[in-house]
Amino acid sequence: MTPIETMPLPEDPTLAAYAAVLNETGHWAGICDAQWRFVFETDELRLSTGEQLGSAVQRVGEHWFGPSEVSLRKALYFGDAGEGTREHFRRVGPFILFDTAGGRDELRRVVDPALHDLVDEIEPVEAPPVWRGIEYKNKFAGSSAVGSILFMRVHDRAGTFVGTVFLMKPRPGMSQLATATALADLDHLDRMALVERPDRRPAAVLMADLEASSPLARRLSAAQYFAFGRRLVRAADQCIVDRGGIVGRHAGDGVVAFFLAETAGSESAAARACIETARTLRTAIIDVAQRSDLQPSDVTLRFGLHWGATLYVGRITTVGRSEVTALGDEVNEAARIEACATGGRTIASKLLVERLNPADAQALQIDPDHASYTPLADLATATDKARRDAPAIAVCDV
Image (cartoon, rainbow, N blue to C red; front, side, top):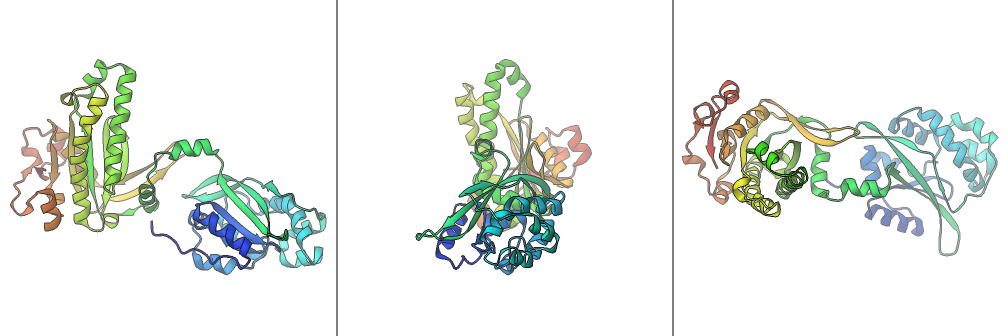
């Protein structure tokens, strides 16, 4: 993902120091000055809410509960944003009133008119050094994500109150977040974020599956087979991620991956990455077998590689999982190619191979100009589904 431009740091040096560190460490955070005027928001928070730099900069100097800020919350948050804002003001308003030099009249002047009645109800109270705000529902990935907020008072070296920092986080605790993301590759997360919005994206498709998995599963104990399956999936995902691909769904012992032309840099680079991943995974499976006390001959993967010129690629996120998937005839055709690659073969379509430019073809030791192809239906290993759904797809071994 292309980094976004960071907002200008606050003029106050203490607040600027907080802003810089919070931004560098990737927090969801915002900062208000001593008069509760908005002065900074971290890149990560802006990325999550979809706020652009121009609109964020325009907010600088606006009161935290001013008309424009209240309007923004209505756009960014799910649920009854109006009532949520009122409840938030009931909690924080006494502290804000204490900090407002002009008292109740000045606070009434700067806050949204919908909060004027609450200004008359609250009494000034000095804020504690730190406190917890109300939970909120933020728009993230097109869904409602509940989070929590922590407020901290900030003082400069002389002990003068200079502003308030608020830290936001998703509801799960850090142990749960760490478990979910411990093995995550940051570049892969960026690629997944790119396809958050589904769209047509030309890509190379890799499908792989384990042959004779049922006899192997019957032979091994459930614990042994599970350990083997976990090693296989981790090895496959690592090979995909290392070559700039996006991991697709896992179904049984099957592996799916997409190599987008827009992230690889070109169609040729995407096709090359797809072929290299298949070759690397074929080597990696030997180590997986050895670590699982199996012979290399016990573990055979078949690969089907194809090019999708009109793939519709997107990300599906639910309460239980997040995965990238694709729609299009080429996905089904890739599955048919993979099913025909029995005996541990790697079969690629002519559409994929001919995406390679001379440099990438040479690096793979493939000569697209002199390759010999066979219609899928004419392969001795052709399945009934291949003959029915994709008989004319031209393929070759790579």
